[in-house]
Image (cartoon, rainbow, N blue to C red; front, top):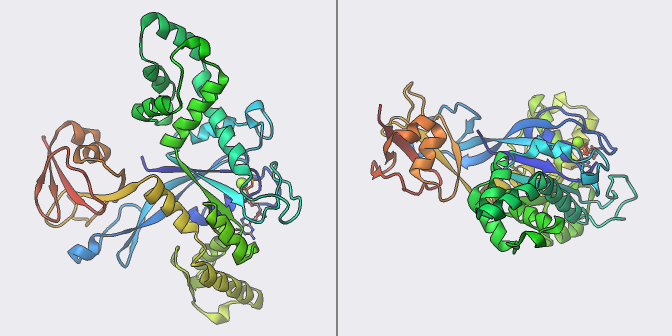
Length: 395
Ligand SMILES: Nc1nc2c(ncn2[C@@H]2O[C@H](COP(=O)(O)OP(=O)(O)OP(=O)(O)O)[C@@H](O)[C@H]2O)c(=O)[nH]1
Ligand SMILES: [Mg+2]
């Protein structure tokens, strides 16, 4: 199972445009709220330094590809309907669609950098709204969604808990187990949120506080201010100061489409592209590409690719490791060089990697071998970014 990132936000901010640019999936995009009703799912690729440059042989990725030593590692994205205040009470499209995000490892909240949309995604005029003002209610609705899951039958569970003297942590961990949340993070959230041990003091506010803390610890997120092609540099700088990443999903979409159509050469994340054949472009296309090119120079690219990479590497703290079956040639049993690039959480160990590759490898783990140093590694060896690892297991 690869990493899953949920794209959330109020309606009309540019979630589907951002999603479509990154996954190259054609989806519905329009300038009114609630264009997306059913969730869109797709795969994007983040950049990693491929060890092929160390072994001096071209790799053969099973998924994604590798261009001049830049390995593209798959990450799943899911784009959902817009959230409005009161969604937990059924406003807008409600919040049932958030169940599609159960397995998400982290969130990207898209906001409208132009500050033109009210909380329901209706255009009320440029600059009328603080672009970051929806961050709080969206996070609240996500918290309320999780609180709804936790509350289901909670009082009954808690009474039972009181009479049997069991552990609160275990009750809550069980409730959120379908969301891929680590029980350790549940325990930490219970401690951080100051949850009362006495059942009489437990109310909806307590559940909400706990839910928000669980989300903060186990499904962290970033804020991406899109439509940056419509704002001034000074406005962008202010948004950055306030912690948002400023991007243009629309320009990234233009570049991906032009690249797919064979009009330009563009590598996602770069701040430049080259036109393949000027003669193939009409005047409007030339003008559009000129505008995009100027934007790329001024903003160091569209920052769309960087946004996902920032979430995965810096916030979710993932590293990339390369399991192989032959530690000398870095191949699998069919002779493919560095076939897999796997995202693992920083601090993961050799045994975690074994289980990730195959539960059988985990259960029958004997040792691991570092492909670079050929050193034997025990189950508790802490993986490093870029490691090439062979797992040895019993037959
Ligand atoms: N100029 C510009 N327009 C954008 C950008 N991103 C989105 N838009 C426009 O904003 C409008 C809404 O975009 P969508 O991607 O459909 O927004 P959404 O958040 O998915 O909307 P809902 O599905 O309705 O919640 C469309 O007209 C897009 O073309 C951008 O980066 N720049
Ligand atoms: Mg949409």
